[in-house]
Length: 185
Figure 1 (cartoon, rainbow, N blue to C red):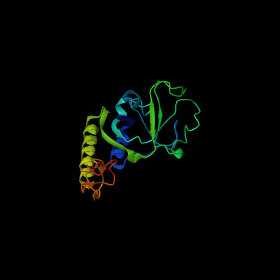
Figure 2: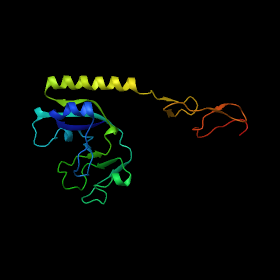
Figure 3: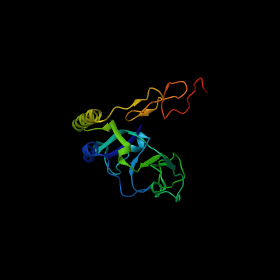
Figure 4: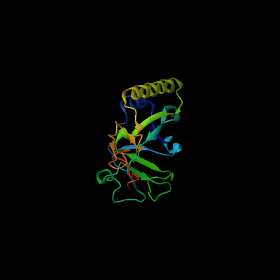
């Protein structure tokens, strides 16, 4: 569970069109989010609480690079080095984060799903946003192939795993099965 604070004028666009990565920042280009709701409540800077919206997010962080000091060699190049997310831990030695709260930057907006609204003082907008989130969720569940586990290897699969027959015991085996034990050993 993570959070993203934005101006209420951007909220509808984020839900309908997805996040648009910033071109630069402390950790370079990407979408800035936080595990700390209070930190997300501070953004955008110099904006009143009435004009802020904080989204509750599900984030597939992928491969994460910890950036815990000023002028880290990969502070802005983590993505070019194979990382999906950069993470500044709480109370790190980065002087620009005065609050001591952690921060994350995700490269690919497709890794982020808006789950709900954590803060919005504008009740009319909040209702509209919740409706858009529900509509998007319904549309994505209709359009996606439901993933389910393979009956043999139990790993999640997108389509179907082609089952083979063990040449000795004749039981069904899956190519993704890590170990198959049979009487023939």
